[in-house]
Length: 506
Ligand code: HEM
Image 1 (cartoon, rainbow, N blue to C red):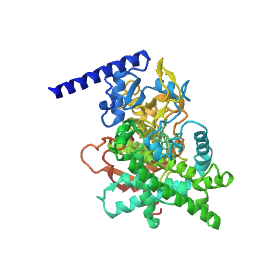
Image 2: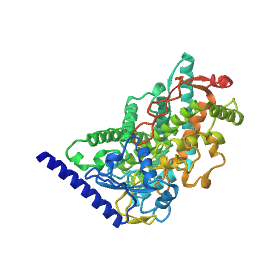
Image 3: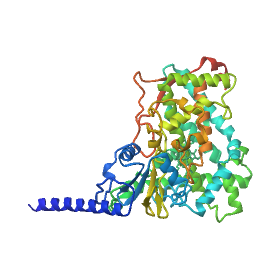
Image 4: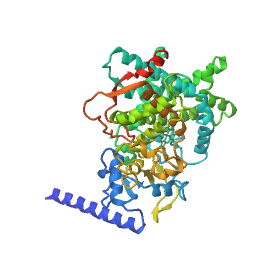
């Protein structure tokens, strides 16, 4: 009898709490919200994996701006081009330029000071300026174009070797793409390769694994961020894990800094290493040691590593998977490359290949690797579409929902690269935003565009591709915050007959 009474009272309290909360929200004119927000967990009970799809369903039901509670945190979910424009570029662009203080930002973001996790303000603005004017500027990217060409050539050689060893050789494409991207990032940042060839470096390989693991734990997926009670009770182990991963990454990058500083003193830095991003930052340290501390340099470089690697790898993997499932598109891309580049040289970043561009855009539309961007937070009270949004509200914008909305894109789940023909810049507007928009949009877009075009284009130019399975390729999405393939791509490749002559010389 007593236990009935306890259950009955608990349910009554929960219902009264939910109704009162709902009425209060309406009085405050907050955006629409699913009615039942439970004590402690709020709306968390509504979500399934993958989160971007689950949130898209909520937006379908409640509209382009929805007010939610992720446990103790207030969140607005924004899911239409015009609402995103209103939040991130019009009157509210500054109001939403802040980042929430999440566990990922505490550990991976050097106590919320890194470029990705710093609050909106002087320090973040400085880092953005350094990123766009010094480190990721067109000039610097051009200086490092040989590094990228060299690494992609090494990938082609590796695949060539594998494919000639056996006709039925199955290639783990995810790890091959990871290798080339990681090597590229490492060499641009520190002049040093990660793995492959004679220079295999176990320490660098471990670092790669650490970066991979921590980016899986970034974003808005740590339950401890929303249910602090779990942290106090020590129930969620992710905080300890994040701390350990941070220490490992820190130690590795400190090692690189010490090595470069020593080589600079000895005058033994090679030309390749002098152009590396780490040396640009170390030379700035000489001018202003109080600002460019080792801590600041480490957090800055790790931001680029973490934000730039998984995203680029994921996009190439999705694009290649889509091409394997759509041989006509693959064939069309090969014809374009044959026509514009020919068979006597490898494709270069500067080649103008509009259809390849359309394939990359279409892949980014269907599978935007950062489907919910990085969480934002309002740092003042503001008004969105006539609704009140209080200061300190976390804001998620659902890029996946916009890219896959049938009201915006005809047959959005069909792969049609042609839809991007002639659709560039202003003509796309806010319906295509794989790199985000506004003040915190991706500063690495220029680098990513170069890496995507060069790597995918070279794979298409040099090899014939086929799938390992007879049935349709598995295109299921994994469950994390970034949009990765559930099953890593495996494929078979063989050198294209028209390219054999050139490939025998590289
Ligand atoms: C932020 C996408 C590659 C560096 C972001 C955001 C998105 C994004 C959606 C969040 C925008 C927001 O919060 O509003 C992508 C995609 C990539 C890519 C799709 C590749 C296909 C890169 C690369 C780098 C990079 C190569 C650098 C080397 C960053 C940084 C931020 C960021 C530092 C945080 C900016 C800030 O908070 O001010 N990216 N990115 N990204 N990205 Fe990328």
